[in-house]
Image (tube, rainbow, N blue to C red; front, side):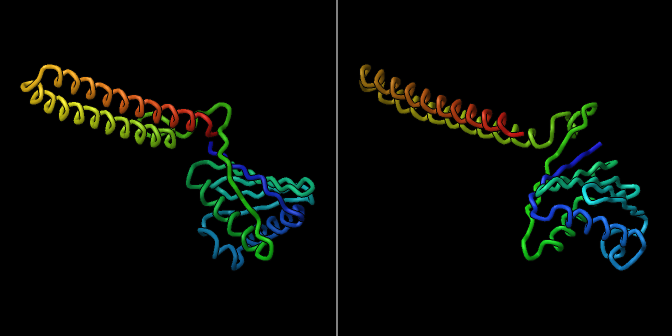
Length: 202
């Protein structure tokens, strides 16, 4: 069950909570706002107090709001990804309109239910991580190919030089090895940096 949550800093958190819930109740009554925001088959119901509110968007899911001082927490629990997106977009548009004079910063964080795994793509790896995985491995493959090409070119040159002088050929081969080692170390260092960066992301 997909879940999103946002922690919003607002001087009048209670006011925004009540305003959103009242607006949702108006949408549920079938007014102009309901036609503007969403499909006709969605049923909206809202209940609230000064510190908490609950808005259901049937059959998409529900949003719960909690006001605590200057902080407003908004949580979306949806039945699927489409419902999650629809509810999130409605909330984002409403809060943007409510706070035109002093815009609110709304940053959503994905939460996973304890009994469910993260959203996965066809091969079973989390989608965001898989994109980074493919990109880093592609870069590693390109760097490895560069090592092979550089080594091949220098070995060819070294072979030509070796025909002229045995000592010069040995020196050329030594240079080839140094270049290959440097490129390989560079590739390994880049891969480790990317892996550490991916591990730090939530």
